[in-house]
Image (cartoon, rainbow, N blue to C red; front, side, top):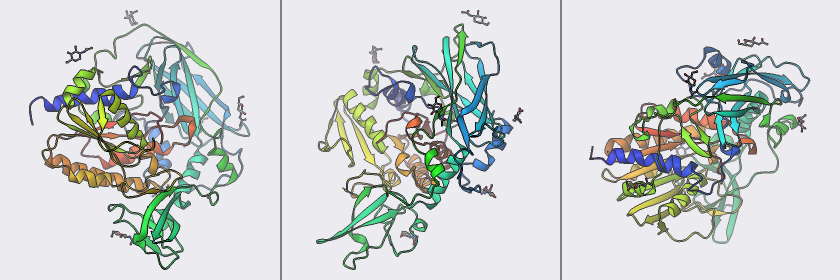
Length: 508
Ligand SMILES: *[C@@H]1O[C@H](CO)[C@@H](O)[C@H](O)[C@H]1NC(C)=O
Ligand SMILES: *[C@@H]1O[C@H](CO)[C@@H](O)[C@H](O)[C@H]1NC(C)=O
Ligand SMILES: *[C@@H]1O[C@H](CO)[C@@H](O)[C@H](O)[C@H]1NC(C)=O
Ligand SMILES: *[C@@H]1O[C@H](CO)[C@@H](O)[C@H](O)[C@H]1NC(C)=O
Ligand SMILES: *[C@@H]1O[C@H](CO)[C@@H](O)[C@H](O)[C@H]1NC(C)=O
Ligand SMILES: *[C@@H]1O[C@H](CO)[C@@H](O)[C@H](O)[C@H]1NC(C)=O
């Protein structure tokens, strides 16, 4: 290994990945209560309680069997309004570093106590005046009651919010969607003046009833199928464009389930206003090691909360970062920063481009929602790239060429042994509507390519960005499913690749 290069790169991570994205002083993203994930940690962790494990059994994200019936009675599911929460320690007085525990009891629409678990309950501690927000950790007792745990992370008055994010029945409906719904992607086939628009999907089994075009090779080796054009003048390789256009009917959902998955049907706070007072100021989170000196293993195996916002600045709980622009520019000198993914990493690209004094060299963008590879040269002698992933990539409701969409794994295989590259991989939202088999397939290929890359290139640094929450803007149960799949796919690489559990909500 060479010189101080490695350690400087690790230091680089600290700023670029954490500070840039979270520090309002530098970026114009809206930070506030919404940005904080209230997600429930799902990784198996050392101190996870046996009760939690038992309760989660029939919802293990990897197991896709959904045995229960569809919900027809809209009241036969958990109702946030009828549910209760209360502090276990009624004194409401805590000290920094202490655990705050809240009991949550769910009731259904008939005000009857829930007797099964599996609801997606989330908790957070916040103080709007201090712009301080932290997630907690929720344990499912499996009988309709939940224990929500928070850490008192700052001094002062704070509130606790418990949200019934998705009910068990909604989760089941979402799983059924992914097993039965044909999806939102269409392909355009074109030859001369003949053209046809046809439904496409990454899983052949989902396109029953008609002959298929197997477009896997055209998609860079990642599974992709469309129905065969009915016009005999069109061949499979006449596939030229893509669009993401939701069909207006055919959802395999009951009306009650549609209600649960529509705005106002999920992400509902449980009534009650729990205020706590946190006393004292302790230094427990002050003497953290520099992020550069922390093994990446911890980033894959942390329990929620992984950090918190204070005065709108993200403070990780496992290490200490910095935000010195000069240092970042120095350490990036002579290197390439490659951001893979979708609009989330494209926003990072745009932010870094202006922050680090870079200039697009790949041609100016004709639209904000740019879907072609982009490259910028920065005055301190380094490059930043943004590269969109392959299908399913949602280009939105306008036809767009498929030509620039390539698998992340394919790009990774092309990185040469001597290249000084820093890689951020993000794969999430565009795969979210599909059966997790699709995400698993892609992420396993990426993990394989990462393994090859690490073997041949000692300079490379790799960061995997996890899924993020959308809060009450759209159902997001699958973010934790995807993170679990990534966790598993990267087994054996946890000490070599950093997992960024950043739950910002930038979308498309
Ligand atoms: C998935 O869950 C079903 C129902 O709970 C169970 O019968 C099956 O064995 C599980 N499969 C795996 C692979 O764990
Ligand atoms: C729950 O309570 C809130 C606030 O009182 C109210 O606006 C909402 O309509 C209620 N929701 C249901 C489903 O009863
Ligand atoms: C639910 O389970 C928890 C943990 O086992 C237990 O403490 C609690 O009393 C149970 N609640 C009910 C209503 O049975
Ligand atoms: C589609 O083509 C790919 C690549 O040639 C192949 O591996 C896959 O088995 C094919 N799929 C089907 C359903 O035949
Ligand atoms: C905070 O509380 C601890 C334990 O109760 C005590 O030892 C310490 O002196 C307190 N610190 C301050 C600044 O009040
Ligand atoms: C940032 O880092 C540079 C180079 O290490 C140093 O000269 C400068 O004083 C630092 N700036 C601040 C504000 O700490």
